[in-house]
Image 1 (cartoon, rainbow, N blue to C red):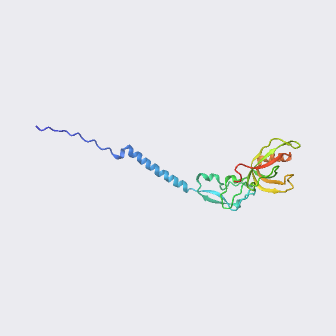
Image 2: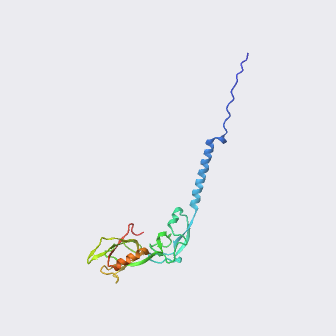
Image 3: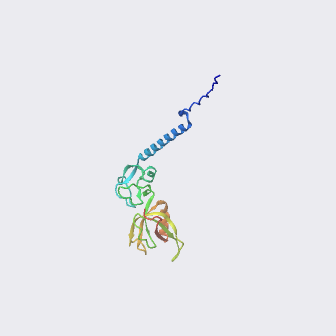
Amino acid sequence: MVRMTTVPPRPRARSVWIDPRFLVGILIVVASIAGVWFVVATARQTAPVLVAARTLVAGETVASGDVRVTEVALGDLALRYAAPGSLAEGAVAVRTVPAGELVPTDAHAAQTTTVVVPSGTAVPASVAPGSRVEVWVAPRVAEGEFESPRILVADATVARLVEDDALVSGTGTALELIVPRADVADLLAALSGDALLSVVPATGGTP
């Protein structure tokens, strides 16, 4: 008698198209390609910014003819530079920008003015046109007596130095400063009140 042996059927191989691992691999490849495309596309994007057509000197009024527009690929850094249309009428350069360089957004301001300030203390040799400085004030309380000094103008820019000017009393040195209009009233009050003013370099010095 012949014994029949039944061979169990082999399980069918799972189709590669429905294997979750295969689908995950496809998604990873697609995501990688999309990421590379996004980086390349972003790097190629340009934005219009202003370039100094001539050297912009601190304290000068900047007109539209003093700048030109160029397209540059800066990415997020584009926000640090002036865009076309951002130059307000009567804007003043608060720092020197050499010809051909991009104009930073904080290199010009419309809400500023210039005031000649005599310094009651010696002005450091490092202070020059374009330097960022602070103005300290010590109000006079009596003849030869002053209160403790405090900062009056936290951020000013030197437009020019004035040597042996008639506006200077006793020190022989004064500075024409570009100051925010919001600080002008207090500064003029200190000047008229015979307070002791001192000009010192701001943290970071000349930009």
